[in-house]
Length: 267
Image (cartoon, rainbow, N blue to C red; front, side, top):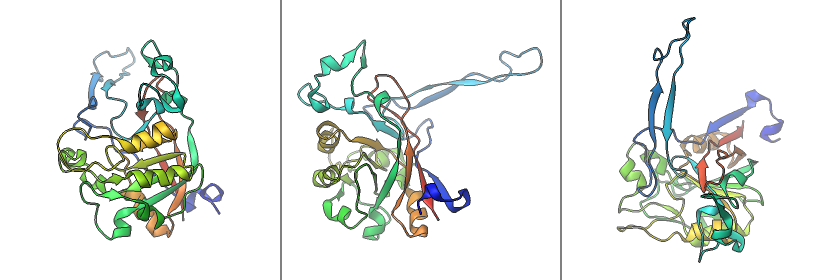
């Protein structure tokens, strides 16, 4: 029996998104999240006593829990499938491979729980997640969403540590990414800032996993996930799979956008 067949009392819905708030971790190469009330209750009262309040928000498309569109990376001036970047753009927006063209995901999800596998609280800075780690977990099927837990979400309240600074961030290595691509997954996600392994050291590094998954295979990435509660829920249920539900915001022509994914776990 799948979660879709079960009564509501027999499933647990786990929110996989990190909260959007001022001061949250963000890559230094992307605009951070900013928030302010623009209209407070009482600023413009209505005759019957009703008041309204609203806010203004500013953020980059790759800040917080978000999905990367295929237009996010190019190699030698071409997007996935050989589409020239110049042909994919019009009026400053991507008419090809934009985030608004990503279909909603409603499919099987599988979790690769590396701290649980290695019996550690979380992976060390810069630690690789390799093929052997994935082979020890669930077998992915075509169309699945594969999520990688490193335990890095435990550092969410320490933005400098979460982003990694010069100490590095754990994540998928190139061989592990190829292993997932060969099995036809629909998307790959992780609880880190960039999904892939970022070794220690100053300055920007290459993004070979982004190149392989987004550019070569057309597989969307989901970054900055909150996977701690999902790990606990799956362990209690004695399973590594769940129903994954999620869709990025439909921002026309964007290279990425926030997403609030959900995991539905059967009892």
